[in-house]
Structure formats: C-alpha cells, structure tokens
Image (cartoon, rainbow, N blue to C red; front, side):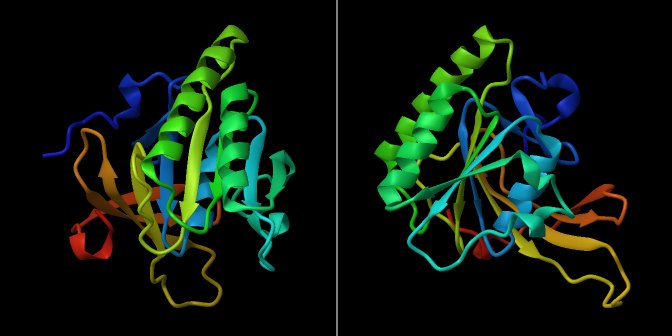
Length: 217
C-alpha cells in the first residue's frame, strides 16, 4: 500500500515541489524523468515552479530543444540553456548549479544513465544548495535528470516515466494527455496515472492499473 506522503496539504511548499495533482517531488534532491514525454513532463514541472530554470543539454548532438515549443506548457523566458561538450560536463554543470542554490530548478538532459557515484555527488550538491538558498530565504534546488526509454540512473530519489496517451482523436481537441508512471521512489509504491491537461491549463490526474513491465526497476 502506498504511503500517503505525496499529500501536498501536509507538505511545506519550500521543501516539496508540486508535480501533478497531489503528487510532489522533494526539493534538495535529484529525481529522474524518462520516457518519450520526459521533456513535456519537465515543462509541466517548470510551469508549477518559480524562478530561473537552468537546463543543461548535450552540445554534441544536432537536436536542440526549441524553447518556443514549450510556450504552451511553460514560460520559456525563464530558461538558461547550458551547452555541454561531454556527458561528464553535463553532470559537472548540473552539480555546480545545484550547489549554488541560485536556481530552484536544474534540468540535466543525459544520453546515458549515470552511475551511483555522480548521482550521489548531485544529491550532496543539492543539499549544499538547499542550505545556501535557505540563507537567502529562497527555495531549495530541485534536480531533474532526463533520460530516454526506461531511464535507469542509480541512486535517483525517484523515477517517473512519461508517455503520450491517446486523446479524443479530434483534430480540434486542445486537450493533451499522458501516462505518468512512478516507477520507483523512496517509501512510495510504484503507481500509474493518466494525466489530462485541458486548454485552460487545468489538470486531471486519474489512477490507472500499474503495468510493471513498462518501467525499469
């Protein structure tokens, strides 16, 4: 049975960041978003956060994140893009951003799942950033690792898989839907939801049967 620790009514907004519905992410820690809709999930998270967002992405690929394409989900003017030359540089830049405590949200777009040691370094950096932010009466930083397919970063505080879900099929339907899966988390059981976002930005989170074979352990 899932422990009711994701109830936002009993959580400090300075320590917990809303994700969708009653779901939230612990600040001062590093979490993982994976799956084909991971960027959309990061954008939805960004829309519920405040302040500057540092987004570190691989500079060696031909694919670039189009900030304008995020406009329907979040304000792209809050983004600071960091282009890294190597995978290790992504982790280093994310670590430094978290440690500074200057940005409430730090996103790291990774090609491969990092090992346990660099993830532990990210957690330590986030904890240091939380102390720095607290001294300035700010929010503890939240780190997000983006990974393709089923993810698999070792030591992440939680892992969330996001995939597009079938809509109404009508071309004029402005609603967007995703299947959101909590594949793993400390003290919380795996679970799955259908996340529906209307044209006005209102979200509906509906529990679904959990399909364990669709997520990594």
